[in-house]
Image 1 (cartoon, one colour):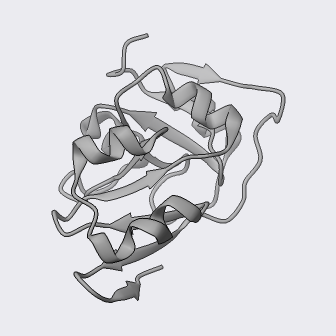
Image 2 (cartoon, one colour; image 1 turned 180 degrees about the vertical axis):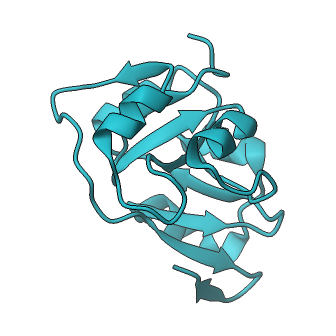
Image 3 (spheres, helix red, strand yellow; image 1 turned 30 degrees about the vertical axis):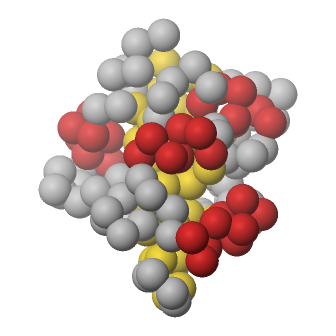
Length: 146
């Protein structure tokens, strides 16, 4: 599969656009292209390729689900454990992820399907839910951002 395509898929949290092209995600959401995106990976091995996890937070990061962390290198990354979404992510090193709606607007399935180049639908179908919480990691402390 071409990772530069714009995918529509049910993530572990909500319906989302995924791609390795931040420009395609920005265009689909109609938002500022300089605003960074969340990165999703399926394993800790891939997480370690993208950032260094502070030693004091390693145990926490291995145990949590549906939580994203902003690391010291300014990358927001989530390790997905949910089996359906994780099996899709296994095909890629990483994918940028965002909710499948226009920036600051409500979710519209018709818009999401018309914007995506590839629609990935599994047995769960598509449903809107809460996005993941985001925490900023310091060397010692953690701050909740969302």
